[in-house]
Image (cartoon, rainbow, N blue to C red; front, side, top):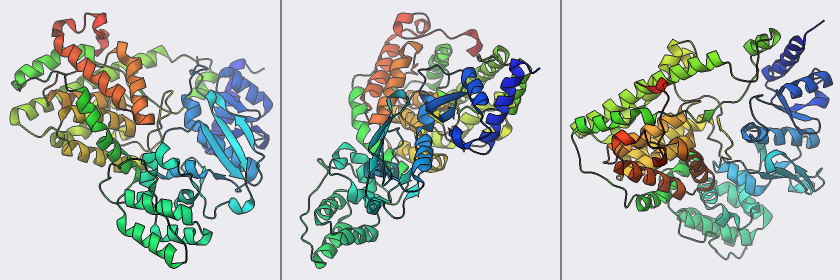
Length: 537
């Protein structure tokens, strides 16, 4: 008779087979291998979680009930699968949500609206306060040329989405609207407006084109509509003067987004750092001595998280009775030890670069650009040597999606990372203020999240490299400030509000500049922390 461990292993084998077929969302009525017995067994063990009746997602058994990470990372894929199951291909995302996707907006929208002739104006409640409204439209409201997003949501084409969006979109989602207006093909947009006879909408879009710097295209659209007999009254739907985006209009929307964020946020950072202590240049030896004295308190854990998948090794552990929902202590200790070693080696490398920049009066951003990739390699080389990671993991930027625990912000797709990282380097090199390089360099780096792991540690190395080469002290993001730190990054990533993050970092800079070095690791009330012995260099 099979033991409970063997039965669970059998159920996991079924789950793994489905995942190997790239099935991420499970509708049990169409998956005969995922029987009720397997469902119940996997749910009890924490490997499956019900979304709504008859629909499940794979789950990490270590996640608590309140952990939203896995749901946010799979919500759009679930909605796409659910809509396709109910409506076939006769559905589309609303115009406003389609525009957000076209503009490189990556944060999770907790309320989604789908349109379909087969819908029934029903609100479907989803986990973690999310919902899906199924809005009934006439068949002629389905837009030809709908195309799936990366998660499978069927989007309206950009011109049609602009025509159908409400005027308030331009003020409520100014950056998304600006990027959309820069990217839209003027010929296709004009043809769609002529087909629908949308003179009022045309007047609004003429004004929007002019606001984003497309003067010739605005004149072309207005002239063509007037030549066709339409009366155009131009109006600018943006309520304020826009920060103009450099580069090509057809450049990656993700690149355009981070360029505008940088331009729009830098003044706030400068304001918050107005009173932060900035010392006169000191010899490299004295600076490196101060950095070394802060090393122990500076070590910190990564904030990134990977998706959870069933592996053959896990199945065997379960079958043999060796599996526990808790991480294996031995494995965890080995990982921690290699992480500590990698951190120590990377700290040495960053410190050496700071010394060269200060001694030789190099441009910090240019030196960073040349050296940065070796920071990542150095951080994880010990884990490769120990066999915890594969050598291929050191190859470069991530090739898979990545999600941040309990955050609405979802980093850009892997393909976008290849465009965003050179753009970040360009922004750093063009920036004159060291506090802006430090704060926005840190923020934009974690916004992009270029690696599967290590993003938090690398972004703080980047921040301190820019701080110390700009006259500020090496500054520790403390355990006591961790909640505020994560919340501030989420505010900046999801809502475009950099003020909390700039205030937090400038406050830590001021506090730790005034604190004697020998006391930084000794006084909890200072906002610092004492690291465990394993992080010692």
